[in-house]
Structures are given as C-alpha cells and as structure tokens.
Image (tube, rainbow, N blue to C red; front, top):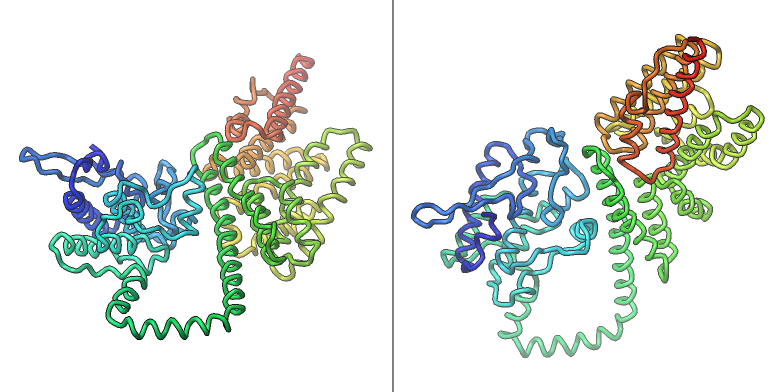
Amino acid sequence: MPLDQAWQGLSLGARIALLIDVCQGVEAAHAAGLIHRDLKPANILVERTASGVLTPVVMDFGIARNERDPAGSLTATGEVVGTPDSMSPEQVVGDRSRIDRRSDVWAIGCLLYRAICDHSPYTGNSAAEVMAQIVTQDAVSPRRYRRSAPSALARVCLQCLEREADRRYPDATAIREDLQRFLDGQPVRARDTGIGFAVRRSWRHNRAAWLIALALSGAIVLVLAGLLRARVEANHREQLAKELGAIQESVRSRMQIAYLSPLHDLRPERDALARLGDSAMLHQVGESAGLRTLARRSSGLSALALGNDEQVVQRMTPLVASGAADAVDRAALAAAHLHLYGSSAARFIDLPTAERDLALAAARSRHLEPARALLAAVGSVVGPEHVQLLLSDGRIDAAQRLLAKLPRQQSAEYSATLLAGELAMAEAADHASHGQRELAQASYRRALARFEQAAVTARSDPHVLDRVCDAAVAALRERISKAAPAPASPLALHPACFDAIVANPDDPISHETLAAAWEAIATNHDLRNERA
C-alpha cells in the first residue's frame, strides 16, 4: 500500500523509522547516479513481511534522470518532471541545471512534513497556485498544525525545505543520520529554526539586563521610527518584485513543459496559468511607479508565453510609451507585433490584388512598422525577432545569414528549427511568384521537414502544428497545376491539421488552416475531374 496509507495509526516514531528506510532507498539510487525527482507517498509502497515488519520500497523511477547527465532530459514518455506539491523550487521554474540530490532532499522533507502533522507544506486551489507558493514562500513549521510535534523534528523538516538548495541537507544520508539521532534520543544537527529559542533562553538568565535594554530600545525606536518605516516599505517592494518575477517565470516554464508534453488539450493549463499571470496586474493599484512597471512587465511577458499576442500589445505598449521599458520588453512587444502581422498576411493571401494590397498596408502600419521601431531601439542585442522582421520584409538571404549567427542560447529548443522552416516557406513563396514551380516544391518540402522536426519536440504547441499543416497545404497547392493525385481529407494530407485543433480547440487560426486544407483538396479534385 502507499506510504501515507501504511502509516495511518502508527506512532510518530514508527513513521520516522519508515522514513529512515525510505532514505536508505534514495541513498542507493543516488549512489547509482540517479535523481528520482518525484518522491511522494504514492511512489513509495509499503510491504508487510511474514513477521509483520513494514518495509517501504521506492517505486516509479519513470522521470528519474542520471545526475551525471548535464542535459537532464525528460524520459522517453515525455512526462512532466514532478508532482506539484512535492516539487522543489528548481523543478518548478524548470532550471534543470540545478536539479540534483538536493531536489530529492526537498521531496523527503515533504514526506517528513506529512509524517509529523498529516498536512502538506504547501496547499492551494490549483497546481499553479501551489507552485507559485513554492517559489515565493518559505514553508511554515509543521508545529503550526501539530503543536505537540517535537521541535527537533520540525528543525530537520524545515532544513530539508529550504528554498535555497545550498541550505538544505546535502543528501539523503544526512537526513537519515539526523532522523536516527532523533529516535536514539540524541541532539539532531539541523539548524535552529529561528532566533526565538535564543531570545527566550537569554531572557530567563538575564532579565535585569533585558529590562534595561528594552527601556533603551523604546527611546531609540522613537528616533528611528521614520527610518524603520522606510525600510519596511523597501522590503515590501523588494519582496513584491521577487514575487512578480517568480509569477512570470512560473508561467513561462510551465507553459513550455505543456508544449513539450504529448498531444493534449492545452486549455485547462492555459486558463490556470493565465489567471496566475493576470494576478500580477493586481499589484498596479496603490503601488509605486516602479512596482507598477514590474507588474505590467510580468503580466505582459506571461501573456507572451501563453501566445496571447493581443494581450501583450495591450499591456506592453503603455510600458514602452512611458519610457520604462528595457530591451527585453521591447523585443517581447516586437515579437507579438510580428506574430500578429504574420497571421494577418496569411489571411489576406487569397484576396483580390487591390483589396489584398490595402489590407497588407494597414497591417504593416499597425504591426510591422511598430515592430521595426521597437527592434531598432533594442540596440546591439540581436534575437529571433530580427530574423522574423527580415522575413517579413522579404530579405530572405539576410534572414538566413542572421539565423546562422544567433547565439546558441537564443536558438534553444525548437525555435531555431521553426525559424528555419519559416525561411524555407519564404523561399518557396519567392520561387512560386517567379513561376519556378520545381524549386518552390523543393522549398515547401524542406519547410515541411523542418516544421515536422519541431513538432517532434513540441507535440502540443498549436502554432508549430499549424505551420506543419500550412506547409503541407502550400505544397499541395503547388501540385494542383499538375493535377497530381490529392488526398481524400486533411487528415490524409497531414495529421497535424487536426492535431492543432486538439491542442487548442478555440484557436480560430487552427480552424482557418483546416478550412484551407479542405479548399486545396477540393480544388485539386475539381481540376482532375475537368481533365478527365
């Protein structure tokens, strides 16, 4: 049975004995170079031997990784790494370079917390709320929920749950040794949880000195009241700034994990993360201009991570207009404008020439020119947005050269592959406009291959899936003039045409892409019937 069921009815000492055995199992995994990354009661099964002894077994190493592998890759199944209320801060923000044995130490601390008071260290109404607390708040003592709990055990527990990994126990061995000391009645080595113990002890032995000191302190407080208030306000601003940064980073990292997960409906995750990102806007009321800037920046960058380009423009444009925007803000707003321009241009492609030219001119004025001005103000920092701007201007060769020069960290994951696909699509359109159909076909095939390569990684990213379908439709349109055999449906043309709608059923762009696929297939069939 799972650990949390097995220890029901057991004394605290018996629970601690079970956790000592769990630590030994984790030690064995660490000795083999494995980091479990998802230690929770459901992954620890407890067996009862013939003699009645309870023996825990650590199970489900499905998301474990080799600590000697710096990449810290996901497992073959692509499951997300961890259960929210047992994840360490470094797991929540997706910083794989910091995930090591101390991440499992955090999870053992969560188990110990439950063993002491039958309560989780972090609770909330949603996984996103719990993860935001883990990143921004220290765990309270388990003695808040069980006043009779030994203070020594609470100290061990809170040392496991330090948000800074360097302040935790170094590994499961150190935890096991301290828990064994507790059972043996010896002092544990965990740090004191605060200054309260030292203050109370000093008061008992030096009451006269304390009374004098308190009298002097009262006079000093009157003098320093103004300074103290300023310090409190400064601390408040600093803490709020950290919380706003943590919100944006949590939205970005969790949305990225959702895109990398197997194909599924993104709406529940997007809605939860959108609420988390929107919470940053609440801090605009009654705060200083600097904090209002941070709140708008956090909410705008969260919207960008969620693909809400219109919301990015709405929130970041006032930030730029106020002069408070930095290079990251300007690049983010430029990226949103370029996405909106690309979507608009795609919708206008089948309009009559005069009508299309007017619509494109309006889109350039609304989105392309603002993006150009924003990127010009960024300075010497060059990113993927500059490549997209060159493509929008039809400067394919320049875009290709710039993409090759981008620093590796800016071409991380699948974004560089996606940009390479956009380059191939632009080349194909250029060849087609000059009547070079064979060259256009070859470029469309390259674009499709690039987009498919990106979709292997980003299995639930609707934008990537839309581009796969776009490339397949464009290639089919080029073949129409030859009356080549056409597929019977968009699903036969490419599964991504339907996968994009599975990932985001409410996205009008995905439905427009599917409609374009049906139209191209129908046109091909009509032409073949005419020639027959």
